[in-house]
Length: 286
View 1 (cartoon, rainbow, N blue to C red):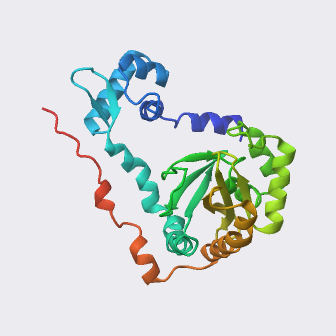
View 2: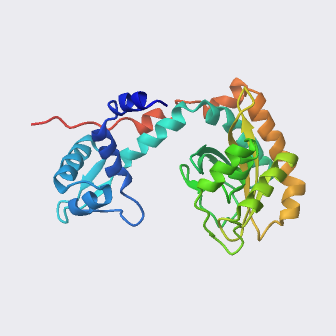
View 3: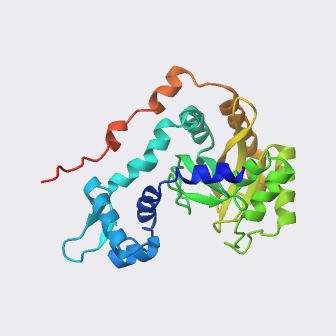
């Protein structure tokens, strides 16, 4: 991009919107409640700016303030922001009937994830009725390099793009078995490309086995991956590859090439339950 074009685009950037979003993103497991000073620090803004944004977000229903402690926390209304993506994502809608069928056939947890930066974001899930050691809520982000969905997606990219994403990743050893070396990871992707599926043996969670296959769009480009997550207490990786990988590959192929029937789609159609996540009511100013 030319310098003039970059400068022109920068004039369109709304810093107020960026700061408002940064306030919401500042909340997390270690910051479930914060006062104004803490919000200002976590959002890299002045206390007066933090006060303006928290007031606005509280008025819109996305934050609540404890009247005694004066500490802020997120409200359930913030779920609507992410839920909108699921409401308009046609690939999630298209995949759900087939993911459900795979879940019923194998009896284990089935997920659908899409890439975002160097992570895979889990946007579809049908859990097993059996005990599992891993809780994977919708919206959870996991690194590409150490997950089967990430490796399956990477296997469909050219070597340059694949290498760049792996080099940009923060390759942390999450378990004793996590592979972090670039040559080994590239070899895993090459192997996944040849067999049509990728595996991850206790790479992010101890005791969690994964097998995944890529999902393609109508032009043959990778848009995500589906996986089956299985505890090592019930399965071996050899058995996973022998029994589950063929089912998974076939499901990924169907999702990539076939539209579900109206009957299959009806329970999962976009818009079902939309009123459950309606826009919060903005109180009238006195």
